[in-house]
Length: 362
Image 1: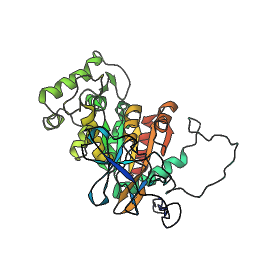
Image 2: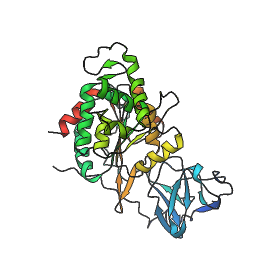
Image 3: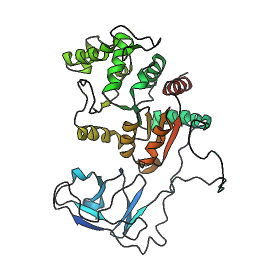
Image 4: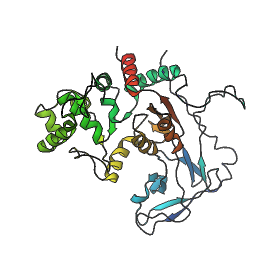
């Protein structure tokens, strides 16, 4: 049976309280980067704004931004730092139509099942049964390969193991990856695996530490900086396999955001956090599925830039967000930071990737 996206059910704007609701109020920005008092801040959910008597959906949203009304009733969801003098910003702190703003969290809700006050195992933990989650994810990724935009957010643990590294490469080569978000460490240790067959000096297959292996990642960074780019590392034959190699061979964007503790960093790593955010945001605007693997902070950053919906060819569809980590705390942290629609899977990341690849690539 072919995979079907959940259907979006739009609110009925031909009934109360929508009919009697006032139109939105706006106020002009008076200083670059500063919103007017009583601004409205956006969420992950679809939000409608009543303009000239009609309800208009914000098509490209993200959490914790403001809404700027452009010409012809166009709504632009804007980070505070991008505000310019003269921008008309939507005002209002209610989301129930009283300010001409309606937050709609029920568009993809399915029929409710059994709902009891007392029930066991309602959370997501190491004891949760994930069989159905895996089966649904297999179906989703097959669909998204042809119809969506899949973002993978990867921590370095993905390339610490030979099999999971190969599995990620296979997923790239078979079309299941549209962009990868990562940090300096993922790319460094992936190329270390290609050059030295180690990650942080430890053999990625046998887990045996090599003599002077703690120099390997630094040698990789130094070599990359000496040739000036990751592309040169490929062209000159320094790397023969791995995630970075597969991304460049298959023209898959690799957005590397730096952190305060980075070694080097590698050429191509964004050292300015707002440049990194801009680069990531260009892709989260198109995201239909996001998978955050073994990287808590990077997954939270991506989740905070990704709405729970996307408008594709005029149709509102859900965005699927997964957080995968061996730590229960890590996977649940994303939900605590506002990405309420996330599906959490508690498992070893190497096992997760190998299972995904074996089920999708046959």
